[in-house]
Image 1 (cartoon, one colour):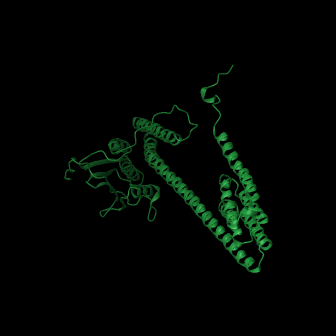
Image 2 (cartoon, one colour; image 1 turned 90 degrees about the horizontal axis):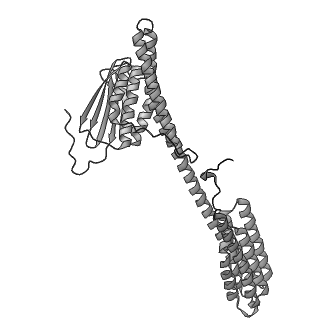
Image 3 (tube, rainbow, N blue to C red; image 1 turned 30 degrees about the vertical axis):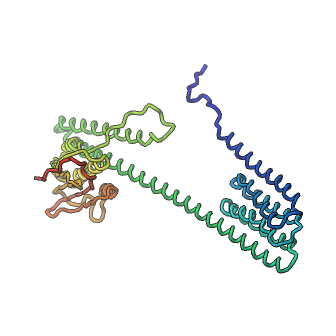
Length: 405
């Protein structure tokens, strides 16, 4: 016998269908009350004035408010029917009795605003035909017929115009929401692309160099080849672990993901630059790291961006500069964090006019933080990457940064 987990046991029935049914019943119950009230009203119509009759029909239409949001076409048909019946049984021939069609005009506006173009067109034609026939059949004088027809046509035009404006406003709001969702998805994809590029590019570059070293010395210096293979294994395992953590983070928003998830590693920050320097040294490029100013903890987004900028710039030195030395300077200022990476290599990593995905990603990171970025040849030869990231104000009581030596 198979045990059933608590998560798979059927829960209590949802109350939403019941609430929906009650709301629908109340809406159609209001329509029934409208017919009853209209019957009682029209029973005393011969003894009432035209204004009282029209006002009573319009007030009775308030019972259809619950049905208006569900089926405005049904409300339009009911109000048109009620108005025509009121005209048929009335003994007062004053033009004011046609004011009962105001309720139908309101329903027509809701049809135009909330239903398809086919339904809106059908509702407008139905209202036009019924009101035109009512004006032509119940107006006793030609002057009354003309004036009442013009007023009825203007009222229908106004209701349709208001419905169209509401329809366009709703569609515009939907379009804006869709655009915001699209922009958010695009921004998230770019963020993930930058993270994956910055995480993998550095490791793959070092692995490629270590593999080349091992291939060249495997016959003459087996010990060096063994060290290179060990470095490749270590960096490969760390890279796979980082990718696994990234995928776990991306799946955390999935409700179907398992509850038991491996803990995420801390977000890379400037404190991890020493390890980055050691990994780069194993690839044959010595990095001189200089920190200036008062070192302090910065917001995580600034720490991560600064680390990734240094990582990508050093990776470019390893892969493209063809030198064994570079300088990294981290300057802690009062208002900005200054990052600079210099080398004496061959200049632009990917040739003139092509900055590659790495420099593009660095520029995007700096732009998201409202900072300044530049990457290009140094005056004395080589290549320089600089980034200035705005910092939040220091807390009261915190000392100002020390002057850079």
